[in-house]
Structures are given as C-alpha cells and as structure tokens.
Image (tube, rainbow, N blue to C red):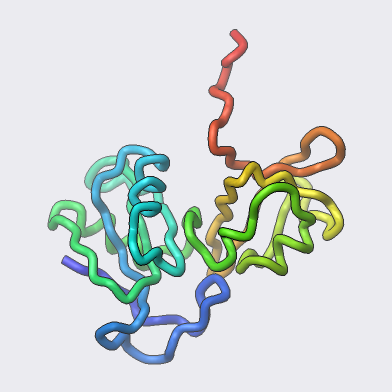
Amino acid sequence: MTFSVAPATSVAGVTLPPGPASPGAARIVGISLGHATLAEADHWIGGLSPAPVLACTHLVSAPHPHVAISLLTALPFETTPELAPAASAAATGQSGRAVRFPGVERLTGELTVSEILQRSSISRIEVLGSGPADPDTVVDTGDFVRPQFRGGELVLVTTPAAGGRLIPFERRDPTPCCADH
C-alpha cells in the first residue's frame, strides 16, 4: 500500500509542483517497516538509491511503538496493511526528524551558523532553551546533523559546547543517561 499527500508549494526549501502528484513526480510518501530504533531507520534511509530529496523519521505508537518514515520521492514504496496507519501518519505529519535534506552532505566539520543556513535547507538554528543562535557562532557538526521538521521548515536544535561553540542536540553516539554511575 502506498501513501502520498498532495504536494505543498514548498517542503524544507524544496519547491513542489502544484496539484496532484503525477506518475514519476516527487511527492511525500509514508512508509512503515516496523523499525525499532532511529538508527535502524537511518540505516535503511542511507541505503536508498537514488537517495530521496527529503527523508524524515517519525516516532509512532500504533499499532506498536516504532519509527515510521516519510520521503519526498518519485518512487513508490510498499507498507504492510497492519502498519498502514503509521505510514499515513508519517506522510501527513507536520513534524519529524530529518535524515536526508538538501545540503546535508555539505554540513561536515566546524561551520558557522550562517554557513549552515547558506549551505543547506535548514531555516533556523536554535540553542536549546535560549532561542536563535548567533550567525557567527561555530557549530561542530560531528558530521551528524538531524534537524527537526516543523511546519514546513527545518530547525536545527543545538546545545552549548566547550570554547563557545555549539553542537547539534542529537549526537550520533550519545552518552547514555547515568553512564558515570
């Protein structure tokens, strides 16, 4: 079962054609394969060829807690009937965690907030609990950037790090809670 929604004018900086999706046209497709973790879903997305323009993960609870995926793609994808509600929720969701998005491959190493905004479709960079990040502040990407998709735009949430730098809130290898106990 394939799910799609009518294209919007713009999704994360990618302009879509107006009207219903025609065969071969890019559209948002929801997929639910029952991935148990974000890492499993990220790995599956990373193996897609051709890579989708936009790929987001979505935590869903029905029929059981798992990670569903939405893709901006021209390719069809299948979802088993029991996971169809999760696929539909992913396709029509107004939020998600972006794994693939325009410019992601250019967000490596240390970049200023301004450079990240210029090189990618990320619309804003926020400091957790503090508001917008200063354009001249350096962000150590750790070569792993997962902005949040919120209402049609990508927002990268960061936290302060040593040396006045910022790091993305989500890290590739986070320190487990209570790791030092």
